[in-house]
Image 1 (cartoon, helix red, strand yellow):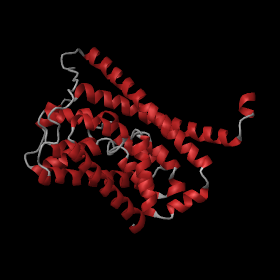
Image 2 (image 1 turned 30 degrees about the vertical axis):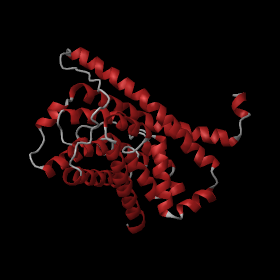
Image 3 (image 1 turned 120 degrees about the vertical axis):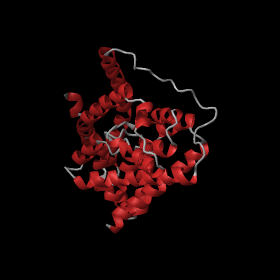
Image 4 (image 1 turned 120 degrees about the horizontal axis):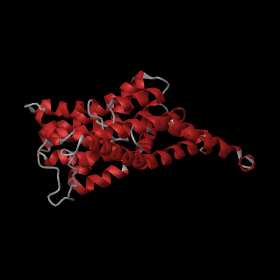
Length: 301
């Protein structure tokens, strides 16, 4: 206790903010990791393919909305998408799933609702933003960029085949996958919470006010920040809500929408499986739609 008494009050304040964000976010990260483990063990690309509609628009919207039923954390979504593509699931179905599955699933939406003081509006704004991005990507891949988006000499996918395991073995594998997901996600959560707490305590209010006075700059700043922090979608709402008073609704909304779609770890994984040209197209479409959407919500609505 003597050690803490000698610490500056600003350090103690930052520590308290850090712990409060962590404690709020951890239950959602844990639940999301368990569900991710269940999907990894029980859901196969072949099962998904059987339910695909026949027409192209139907397949685009199938990929866009299926994430609500089969939620997946963005930390492991890229290898899943590559497996879908290997099993001949169309790119205009797989890529929309890539951007919506980590956002529109019930856990993330409820986490967003809770983080922003039981705000249904913020959860709906976030879901709508991801649906718009997914639809834009689906139309682009279905009607404009119709070539394969996979590399010809891509990194081999290490697939786990759980079909022949007993029920007890499958449950054990769910636990193994969930633990791996939890700890992989946790390290990014720690960095994100630490950054948010330091911003609130040490960055002068006048600087934040001057940034937020120009909506486009504030939106772009938080989009870049979201990319660099690479937070898990089950936890990023708690970091985003802590930045709300400093930056405003539109920048934080951009932070929440683009974070699960574009971050450092996802781009590094995409580089292993997908063509460089498509990755640049993906970055451009996602960034453009999110910027316009957040600006519209913040300025027009």
